[in-house]
Image (cartoon, rainbow, N blue to C red):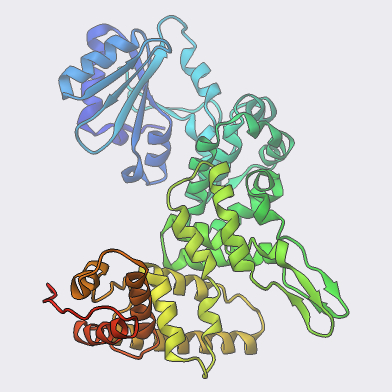
Length: 464
């Protein structure tokens, strides 16, 4: 098969010329070839060039011709060249002696679809070099290792989760024997730095249908190593005719629901962790059924430990907040819910209000048609009330109409507990709807409150 069109880019012409100048043979290999064949070339960020000859000399020569910034690693005989255009990075690697070096490199590749190479030489220009049937695996949409998967995963355990993340990206399936080897060697994942594992896990979480691949992580045994708090939710318990849903499969369905509406990685994390408190709070109440009271609060308190273990750090407070309030909108669906309760919810949700409402809506997974309609009607009611109040009172990202310094200036006092009491009272009055969220109303309220507290009422102008 000839793939000359894959080499139409100017950079390949420069690389071929450089080969000829120094007498090297070379090939483009890996993800670029794969993505060209399946029509994803715009998404390719890297171009791997394999050469038989002096790889450092080649990289330097190409670097001069395209004015790229070069980073060389002589220890491993590789050189990295970052191009200034198209936001791609070229990696040069190779062997100066071995004639069979190309096939050896292809053997060491993670998967057959990443072992494909295209010749850049006069005698094989544009020719596809495919000793492990990677092209057929692309057609069949299969993730498979070039050699026996057992020693491959034993030696390179990161490739176990890499197989799943690549499958989620390309919508390919994992070859049966390869998946069996992943299950067999899963404990080897312990030697892989957790940050590298999380990079691949995030690719899965950001895929179009995360549940499919999270389920495979679960079946393989990897999810229970990474997130036992999530896998502990699996299972259904029945007592006296009362049963609860399988909260693990409910959780990954919620992740999918969120993913259809949002590309936010951290909202998807919140969806994945939103029910982890149910394992601890589960309780059977005779003649009533199963209860998970306060599971949101318990779950949110579990998140710092999880983030520390997985070295996530970023956005922990955001995920905690979303999990803590994840059931709050549901409790506001009653017709008797007061505007005060809704104001407090809007205030507490702050800038995360839309994300919180999306998670709440996504949490409706019941297969009972009547219940589903009821839940959705309640959610719609809450959404309309929240929208109406937010437009009226502007409570999201709320900032007090008067600051603590304004209060001190007003009463000519130094920092003291009375300032805090007045600020708290003002906030409560606004949230309870006693006064409007405006300067004039807040000013008058503070005057009255100051008099109640016995403060000297020596007014000065407040700088607005």
